[in-house]
Length: 126
Length: 181
Image (cartoon, rainbow over all chains, first blue to last red; front, top):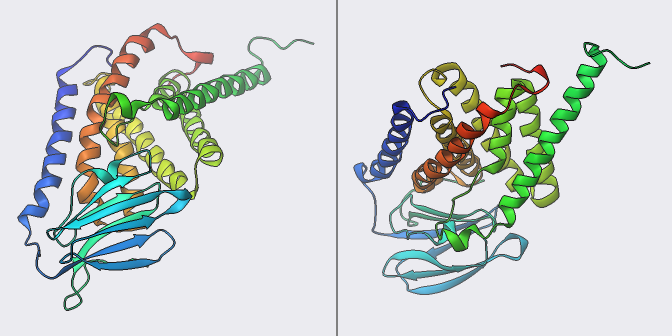
């Protein structure tokens, strides 16, 4: 390997940035549902719960290893307002469109926006 | 009766000891990374220093590919058994496999074009991709679109930092135990 900074190193970083931007843009290129959607809470042990995004509410979810998540549903949007896990990835962003997801790996909890009962689920967790 | 320097038994023993020392170093760095309050310094979730990967890369280029694979696998197993659970072990396994494949690919295709900075960024990105794929097997494919972009961007600065350290260190470390890649 070379041991001094090369232009190809910049090319690798640029390629990664391009991949990241493509992944961000991909959902916007697809039609997404915002009407009649629900929030599905999936636990690592297979349990699932479903909540309506139309009703403003605050949920307290209990995950693995004593971790808890507080999820706020407001204005058709769900976000994690507080969590006890050390990573904090789940606190980034909010979800409102069908297919979007928030995940707390330490707690083993996934929050997914799915189409309402009248529609078809985007994914089925076993 | 002492073994000669070229005795196969001495070579195997030295190889075992060198690999064990590198494994200890990787474990210490993994533990250090776990206890560092990185969240207070950089309030961005998902950012990891990837210090243990430095040892694996060093082993790859200064000892051997097989030794690097064994060190990586042993580190993941020990850290997962001691400090993690089945879920985190699965995440670590997927990340370690992809980052090792990145090392092999980087050596095969990039060694004449890139420095360790590019290799570090590539391995960090593949490590994060492996973890995202592990999450996708547990929680569905939607996780890939939600978190992979963040993880790919996070891989750039810390992969580059590791690469800078390797750029400085590796030319000053001769082949260990006559190993060559």
